[in-house]
Length: 530
Image (cartoon, rainbow, N blue to C red):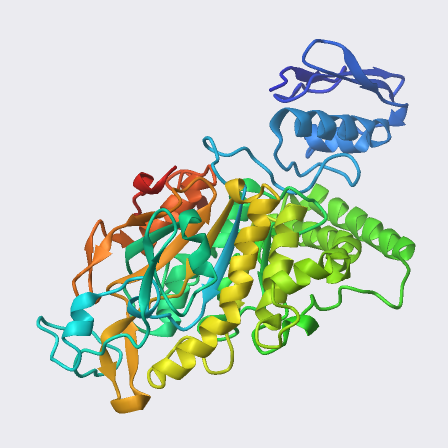
C-alpha cells in the first residue's frame, strides 16, 4: 500500500493514505501534481489547471479528478490497480480492469466449474447407487418408517428395472442407463450420501442454487464470481445455458443483493432449443461500435460527475460495469457460440449428428468453449416442459429417454476436457435438486417414484477430487443418507474450498449482517480430495 499525504500551500492538509501527491500553488494556479511509486520515483506529472481551494467538500479523490486535467486520478487508478488487484471507483476505461478480481483465500484445486443440472431429480437407485435388498424385496413394504414430510404418498418397494454393472479399475457401479459415462468412472467421485431439507421442487432447486429455500439469496455462481472474478474481461464470470424458468426462475442465477455485475448471464432458456439459444440484444444492428463507444464514454462521464458530487454508489457502479461488459461481449460471445470451428469428429463425439443427443450435446460443447475462454462458473441444465427427470410415473420409459439424451454428451465433455488437459483444473458437478424414493408411486408398468430429499447421489469429476472414488452411503434400500452424510451446505462449502474460497470468509455485508452462501452451516468434505 502506498502512503503519504497531500499538502496544499494556503489550504488545509488533506489526508491521502494511499498515494503521495505534491501540489504547489503559484499566483492562484496549480503548477504541478506528481504521483510517486513505492520506490519514490515520480510516475506521472500533471499540467497547469486552476483549483478552487475554498471548496468545503474537497476530498483527495476530487482533488485528483479536478486538477492537472485529471492526470493525477489516472495515475492513482493505475497504481492502485497494480498494488491491490481490486476494483477502484476512480478507475477509468482503458486504465484498469473494472472486474473485481481478488485472489483466492488459499490454494485452488479447480479454476472453473461446469454444473450439469439434471432438473427434476434423477433416481439414485436407478443410476449410480444399486441396492440388492431393494431388488430382493420388490413389492414388499418398506421395513422402517418413511419421513414425516413427504411430497406424495407412496406404497411398497419398487426394484430398479435396470441392471447395474461394475466398471473401470475402481469397480464403481453404474446402471445400464449410462453406458458411456460408465467408461469414465475412474474419473468420477461419487457422493452417495447427499441430503437436503425440502421435498418440493421450488424450495429444493433454490436451496441447491442459492443455499436458501425460502429467501432470495445470491446464487452459487454469483458467489464464485464475487469471490474470484473472471479470467476474461470480455465475458461474464457466470454463464447459465438454457436454464429453467420454473422453480425460482431467475433467482437461481441472480446476484440478489450482490452487485449486479455478478449476476449470471442466461443463454436462452429451457423452452428454447440450444441451437437457437443466445443472449438477447447481443448484436446492435442500428449503431456501429464506434458510436456505441462514444455513447458509453459520454454516459460514463455523466455518471462519474454525478458520483463526484453525491458520493460513490455501488448500484450505479455495478450498472456501469454491466454496460461495459455488454459492449465487450458483442464481439466475444458470438465467437464462443459459433461451433462451426469445431472438427467433424468433435461434433460426432458430442452427438451433434443425432437428433436425440444434439440439443444437450451442443450445450456441453458450449460449456467447454466457455471454460476455455475463462468463464468461472458454467451451468448446463437438462430440462423440458415436463420437468425432465421428475418421474412420478412412467419411470422406465422417461428415465430411459432422459439418460439417452445426456449420456453421450456428458461422456464427450469428460473426454474432451481430459484430452485438452483441462479436467485436472475444471470441476464437473452432476446432479439434481434431490433424488427419488425407493418406494413406488402408482403401480404396474406406469409406476414411478416420489421426490426424496433424504438421501441421493451426486458426482464430481476433475478439479482436485479423487477419481474412481465412492464416498458415503444410503441405507440398504436407498431412502436415507446413512454414512458420512453430506448436506447441500456441505457440498457448497466443499466446492468453494476446491475453488480456493473459504466459505466462512466469503461474505457480503447487507442489511446489517454478513451473509454467505452456507449461512451459518457447512462442513468441507476433504476426504474426497485427491
